Image 1: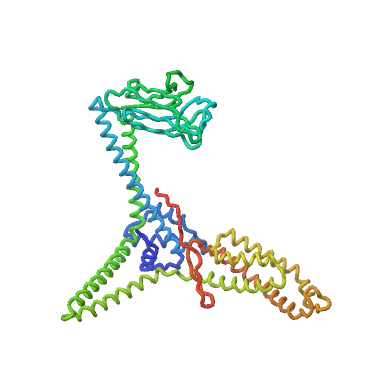
Image 2: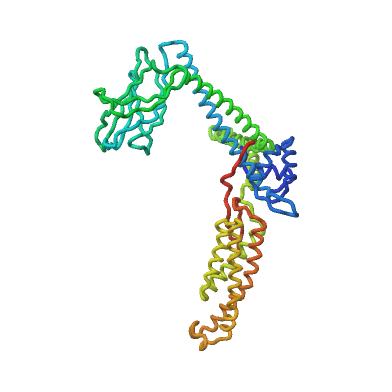
Amino acid sequence: MLNLQTVLRAFEENGLKQDKQCNQDEILYKLDMMGKRDFDREIAEQIFEQCRPTQQNLKLVYRLADVSQTLVDASLILNEKIKKAEQQLKQITQNKIICEKQLAETSVYSDTRFLFLTLLSAKNIPLKLKYTNCHIQLILGVTNLIAKPEQQYDRVNPEFNQDFEFQIPPLITTLTIQFFIQTNASSPILWGQAYLQIQQIDDQIVKDLELQLKDPQGRELGASIELEAQIHQYLQTQLQKFDQKIYTLENDLNEYRTDLDVVERPFKIKLFKEQSFKQQKNDIFEQFDQNQQMNEMDQQNPNQLQVPEHKEQILSVLQSEKHLEQFDETPDAPEILQHGVIIFTIYGLITLFVCSAKPSFLDVLVCHGLMFTIFMDRFEPFHLKLVGGGLVASIFYDILWMKQYHLWWQSDDQNNPEWGLKAQTLLRFVLIFTYIQFLYKFVVCYYIYQFHRESIDPTKRYIFTIWRIQYKVGKNRDSSSWQSQ
């Protein structure tokens, strides 16, 4: 099964790095070359539909990491579909064998027959009974089965909709159907019963029956049981259904396996090399452990020549492993994201200082929106537009207040009492940061626009560094739709 690191390494070995943006033709050319045959264009179209392209020089380009993740998702989903289809095929094949056996017994031995019955509902149960629960008991010879109604049911016409299968014993000709009611925690009471005569069921068609319920003394109660019953034809119908399902599942399996081969073929060589490398590493460590055990057992003749040799092999393997694992590390964030984090952080610090002295709820909301953009992976266009709109509104808000800011700057402790006595120095300090914040908002607007234009994928995980502090954002893709043609 594919994994993201294997796909990225295979692309890189063929000249495409994971941070590169490529058009469809470039990616398909590499897939054709790696698979040594043309990559199925219909499957390729589905894969590209799951990715987020950006426009560059009037052409759509795709992030190679995004395409690689989609290929891995496609492989995973197709493997799951194959596993599920194989399980269904196995179960249906077993059911078909049982059905064929029952059909053979029914056809050859007249004394061995199978009754298939669908219990539909009970009709016209009187309201005056006021029962809280009910069930139906089916008795054929020594076989005793119980049917309970659906969870939400009508007390007058309770529905059951359950299937039952009986092997009809010799000399048994009647199926007894008993209707029990129960009030609260009391014991169930037999209210009525009906009888189905086996000989009245035709072997070739399904019969819809309505049997009248009678009390233990044989008096009709005005209620009935509705059901469907069949003996021989049911098995033949089921056998045909099993054959059709097996045919459909086999076709689906072939299609899934073909699609999986198309998706994984370009990366099979790389996958085989990595599996061989892991096996080689395990063999070397196992051999080294065996040599150590032998040295401990034979202290008089230590094998001093083999141990250093194995140490060199282990060091070589570890170095190769380290080279492979460098792809597993979280990639650095794009440059626009690195700069955006720094810009947003500085803006947030300025806003927190300014708003601590000068209330501005709009600036606080915009600041939180920018932090959500980074730390909660909200790179969706709608969120960016919403934050950008709030930022533009705050710029106009500051413009409207510029005259008041100027008056505050020219004021002193006597004519500006709302700031408090001896607060002129603090006031001017706050206003300086207010002017800086106002100008800084245009820089933030530019980076929000760049985020929107770059279409940063929120389903990917990045790592950015700010003042020697590393922080991860984003997440691995956890869902993708895949449809096989």
